[in-house]
Image (cartoon, rainbow over all chains, first blue to last red; front, side, top):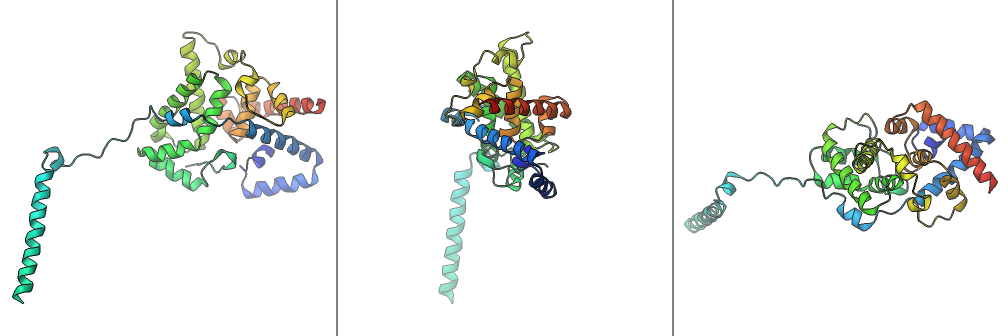
Amino acid sequence: MLIDYLNDRLDEAKRRRVVAHLASCGECRKEAALLIRLKNNQEMALKEVPQDIKLSAFDLVPKAQPQEKSLLAMLNLEPVYDSLKLVGVTMQFMKKMILIGGN
Amino acid sequence: MKADKRGGGLGLLSDSHDESILISKAAKGDNNAFELLMGTHLKVIYNYICLHVSGEEDVKDIVQETMLAVWSGMKSFSGKSAFRTWILGITRRKISDFYRRKYQFSTVSIYEEEASLTADDRFDDSVNAIDVKSAIASLSSEEQELVFLAFNAELTYQEISDIIQVPVGTVKSRMHNIKSKLRKHLEKE
């Protein structure tokens, strides 16, 4: 329970119980002091992850597949579609201009 | 889904909510979410492997194999245990696989192999609390693993029992012995 308290793994009710107990129990305070020393030591003893391991850690993990190609892309028709879209936009613009001119 | 709420000095995500979101995205195949999620656990995974394995290249291989195994198993993570407990269980199996490959058909345990390592091989950093360090170095490999899981991985006794596959009562009694040993050692200093 004391370790869980130090690791902040207790819910609020249990945490309060531990705190209240520590206030009245010298033995547990001594134990908590020992555990705090251990925990501090362990945290300091943790080695930093070397850069090459950081960079290579996910090398075996398959990368996400690119999104499925559209039918246009599969048939290599995207340039044709783009040209038709451009013609459509131009036609609409010309229609607008004619309507404006007519008014 | 039970997610970790720990922060500490391990650069973990700010709260369990963030981790749950990343877990859910990673389970759906989002690589970026997976790398972000596992990046926060990399330090503890790396140090856990270093506790058992000394060669740099071997450690690197086991890290990669662990990441692949976690990635492959993301969809099956049920959330019954905390995420960190789950990934450390996978890491431990990958360490065992490494030793099985190394000594094919042999039943050498990870502890027998590492008995030849000195504590300095495993922790060659500059630790100021030399007395505590030497007290921990005096523990057996199994005991050091328990200390690591309790203090670095910040697992509960139940979670430790899930990983090392011994009853929770055994974990408690071993931790009790460890504390007595350390107390005696430190009192001598």
